[in-house]
Image 1 (spheres, rainbow, N blue to C red):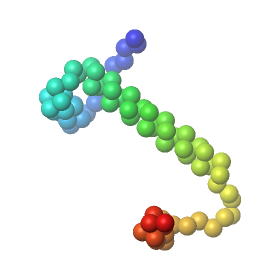
Image 2: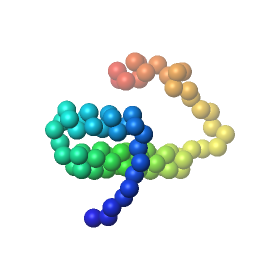
Image 3: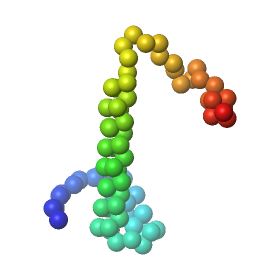
Length: 76
């Protein structure tokens, strides 16, 4: 296993310490799980944006989210 030294803000460390206390999980295990989840989500977001860029067609009309009737669309 590789080692890494990371620096976090005081606020982040306080929140993390509180989470360790509440969940009663070992600090190392919790940190590793949270870090892995964050990496997985970032990777997924990145890959989805790459795919979306491939489907982006220049000069096509764009529809703004606020212009969509989401209630009608999602109830179909």
